[in-house]
Amino acid sequence: MARTWIFERGVLWAIELTQVPPYIEPRLPAQLGEVRAESIPALAALGASDAAALRERFATGRRCFAARVENEIAAYGWVSHRREYVGEHEREIRLASDEAYIWDCATTPSRRGQRLYSALLCHINAVLYRERVQRVWIGSGVSNRASLRGFSNAGFRPVIAVTYLRFSGWRGIWIGAQPDAPRNLIAAARRVWLNEDEHVWGPLAWRWSISATVSKHAEFKA
Image (tube, rainbow, N blue to C red; front, side, top):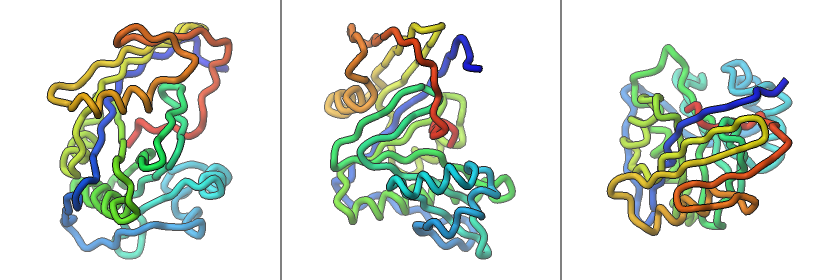
């Protein structure tokens, strides 16, 4: 049964890939790279999602990158092009053809504090840079300090803060520009985040919807 109300606060960050992105060396030997469907059992064992959902992700063009330590996945992150559903904020974001979105990232508890997450984000950005992606988005809840620190280490900058409230069928979003964020990035973030069926008045957007369905593809958990 769907919850009657939801309250979420997050921050959307971005990096412009106009030059070679930063590089970070992890604190222990690790192999960084893209993984394919053969890694589904290992990802499922880490709690990324169930095997069926992971197969659907790969089948629909989502990509997964991982850091391996001693031949075992120690950190992972997913990348989407064009669009993705942000489950905790109950919305689909739409990306330009030269943008990408990193989501559903995690590091195994025993490997945290080794800069694996920061190094993995840098590796993903480097791959996307070579593929001529111009901008990469990533987000997290405001209380997830480890993720926010990893974003900063990898060269991302905060662009907008998002507060989402749903009560019954009413859904409202407050978007606040982050200090020193360039105007073009703020405009791009609003374009990515806001949906066409929402009424927009300055930093506030709202809509009425009977549905309260939440996708399995949640993001703000990195």
